[in-house]
Length: 134
Image (cartoon, rainbow, N blue to C red; front, side):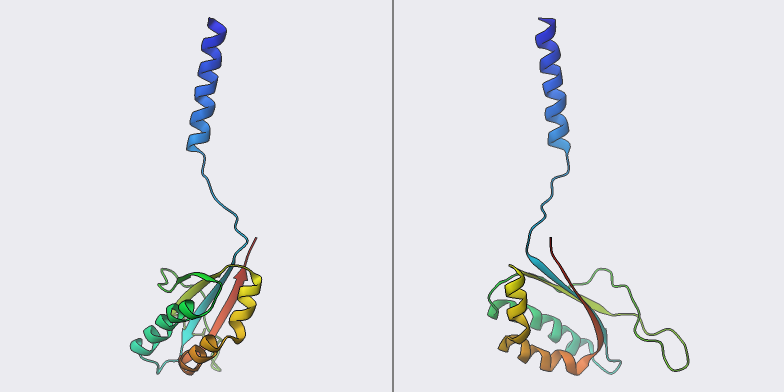
């Protein structure tokens, strides 16, 4: 009886540990993260239109799973000025999740992306892009 009680208690402890464990996934999708420094003369409306364009592209380019366009924290500065002062702080960021590397590769030359680039590049001073997967 004592042995059964110990086994039940041990099982309960293991179940609680498993239940409380942090669960996460390591998907093989590709995340494309871009931080942006807008041109000083760009307007907030132009900037928002460019970010909204990311969502529009997502509806037109096969293989895009998710997009994020609302930056909560953006780090980094643009290139230092000729006077040696630090560059302006980056303003915005967006992220696109692609189903796989092939989808990320197709995005580069897709007509919807090339059309969006016309609006985006006209108001972007510089950007930094990263692609991440598992």
